Length: 142
Image (cartoon, rainbow, N blue to C red; front, top):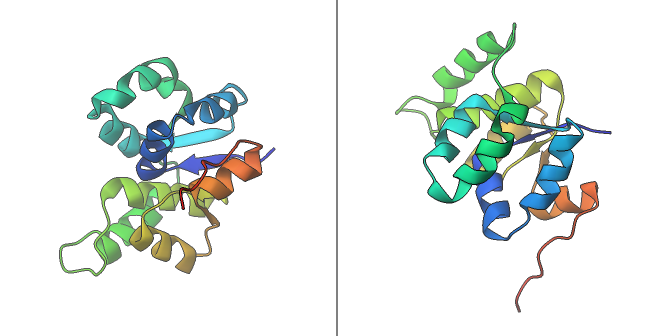
């Protein structure tokens, strides 16, 4: 089965919609990676702490080998104050890991998504991700 890199924006939205059970199922199967910088960002959100205490060490991943070089190149291109769009470190780390390891990236940040797609990263929205893993996307209100 496919492994996924999950971004902070996607995690927060899944938590808000009470869909973390789907993520938990994938964690047990070792199919989810959450970059270290994303975990640090999520730890600041009180509502995410319980899930992170239970699962954070199972999903945490840092950069390895060539990923450091790619990360720093992306930081220079998209993380500086003069770049447009300017991306956060956790977005860049998620993009780097997804790009180098050829895993889909689950996110909902348009600017980061545009950069990821320009590198050839397969970017999934939350509903698309849930359909792919057999979960139920949230119903949209009309």
